[in-house]
Length: 288
Image 1 (cartoon, rainbow, N blue to C red):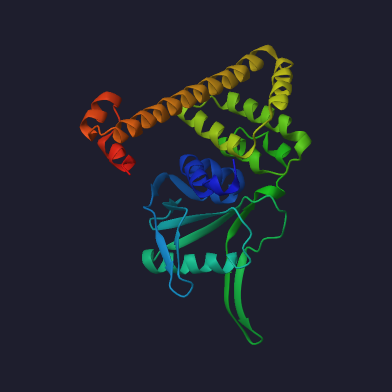
Image 2 (image 1 turned 120 degrees about the vertical axis):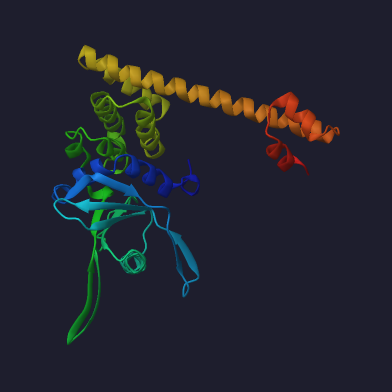
C-alpha cells in the first residue's frame, strides 16, 4: 500500500480512541496515576484554521477527563505526525492556544511521531529574548522509530501490540515481530471487533511476503501446543475474514459493472436498483 493511500491519522485515531487508557498507561504511567478514567468524554472533531498560512487542520484526538481528587475538567490533546515537519513544535503551540481559547481548561498536549526516520524531535516551543523568556511551551512525545520493540512484547497491552509495527526493527526481524504480535494478541483475548482493529492496524504497516508467511507458520508450530493453537486460530480467522471481504468487494464491483452496462442500454435507475440491489444514489453517480 502506498504512503499516499494510507489514512495514517484515521488509523491512529481509531486505535487511540478505542484504547485511550492503555495508551496512557503504556507510555506515560506517571500521567496514568493522576487521571480519573471513570470520566472520559471524546470531544467532537475540532477544525483549526490558520488564516496566515491559509490552512485548515482537523485535530486528531481530544479527550475530556478529570484528575483524581479534583473536580475541574482537563482536556488531553493527542496529535499524530506521520511526516517530518520542521515547524511542528510551533504548530503544537498554535493548536494548544486555539484549544485553550475555546475550552478555557488545562490542556495536556501529546505528540506521536510515526515516521521511519530516526531524529531528535523537539518537545517544546520557546519564544525568548536575551533578557526575558516570554514563552516555554512543552508537550509530551512518543517517537516510535526509536523504541526497542523487544521491550514492549512484555506488555500485555493492545496499544503496544499494534505499535510494534512502527517501532525500531529491521527487515530481518519482521517475521519475529509479527510472531510476537500474534502471541500478544492471543494472550489479550479481546473481542473480535477489537482484535480485527489491532490486526488491521498492524498489517497496514508490517506486511509479510508469502515466503515470510511460510516462515512465520513454521515458527508458530515450534511454540507450546496450546499457544500455537491459539495463534494459528488467529491467523486462519483473519485470513478468512480477508477472503470474505475480497469476495464482497468483487461482488460489489460486478454489480457496478452490470449497472453501467444497463445505463448504457437505457435502463432507468429504479429498474437497475431492483435488479442489482444497488442504492439509487450510487446508480445516479454512475450516470455519464
